[in-house]
Length: 504
Image (cartoon, rainbow, N blue to C red; front, top):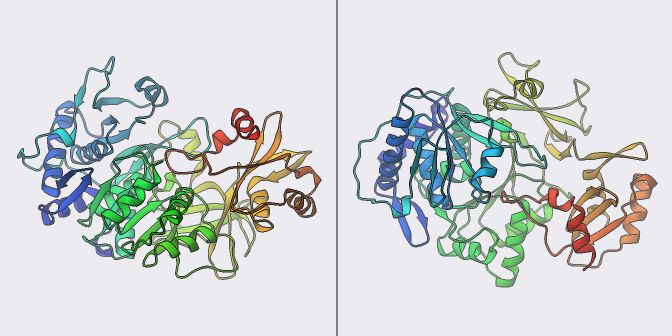
């Protein structure tokens, strides 16, 4: 895969891999091992069913509701072949809950394993690991192009009303080509699939290795079981992972008890949250041969649009930069419709031709966030709602969300600013500040050392003001995580969670 292939679709890369690596292992799950030929055959069988069901037109949405992570992959590949749109449902929710969340989506059919679906006239059952892998079928792709919609993913952050985002084929292919060529990934790559299929980073986990002939190892235990994850890293000589900083911190804590050094790891791609220098340095210590890369990019602009390579243990800074834009993209820091100066914090705005199609069935919101770029004709400027700045080395830094602010005594107060201050002037490792109704500001933190809360409060008063005093500091053994591996700020903001930990 090379720069000359820009403009290819995801299907082009998949066809090359299925042909070139037919007899190589594509995936492993528990004791099961599936070759590229078998994966191609089984996804084609499912694609043929989808083609029959969508005979009245292309780009039909296919909802996928599985307990098995592997089956989501087969469904994704089948949708690619049939020119359908992949819509993964959350297997941790009931079918009715999923339908309520996806009520604006015109669903063609549901693929399922052992759930009974009601009021569905077009349903089919599929399970790769129990299917007859010896079946033969001719490979066939419904004609496709780069402007095809290929998936629907929902925003994952803190919003109680996630928005559906319609992904574009060419934009997804652009990221895959960028990551594989930038880091010279080849058929030797082995990826441990950590991300939930219902969040878009899953596409990085599975499509990056498949498009270069690599191997995917699927978890056979829940992601919360860190010791099993470490076992898989070692047993399968995993060379690449995409991971959130919060989940890496759990692995590092488990690694310390095992005193295990993972020499096979070549690439660690961080994304989804701010990456602290502490987490980056500890990762380098436990994975001494790994290149550590910090990625940045919201779901709306397709997987990632900025990156920073950590070349050695970092000193003198608290947070790792998000670096520079990837090829064919630009990121501006803006305030009041003007470009910000060096070190001036503003909104991060991403200029690209490789964004998603925007929010499905929410044209007004899309028009507000996706605007024509005033800097380059034909480019989209996406207003992220994230805050950041460029430093004197032209490196981009992410600070936090614009919506993580609140007015206290009439003064706008930033939660990320408070978190930074707490971590800078104390022994705190990680920190999340929330405003809880009837309680006020609460700081949750983790630390292996004694923390002087009185000193932290004095520092906050000195640097920010008396209005921002934090009422309670709650020490956690670890932060609760979402299924996408991020800190679960929704739970942290609940009074029930606060009272539970306050009583300990």
